[in-house]
Length: 61
Image (spheres, rainbow, N blue to C red):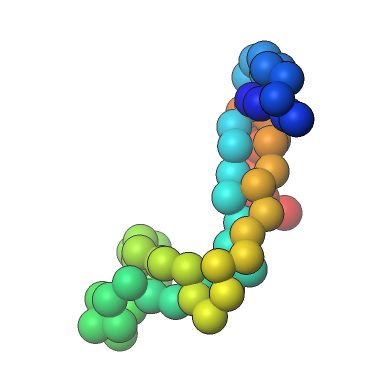
């Protein structure tokens, strides 16, 4: 990880990008999705995002 030009090594972490707004990449894919299916999302009306560093295996809550 690079913070203000300084290299920081982080072990056992993942980087997550959380988009504040998303939309389906393919509306037809979303319309036919069943519970448990995965759908592709792309940034929506805003490209604003938050990058978080979390421990490996951490579940979103």
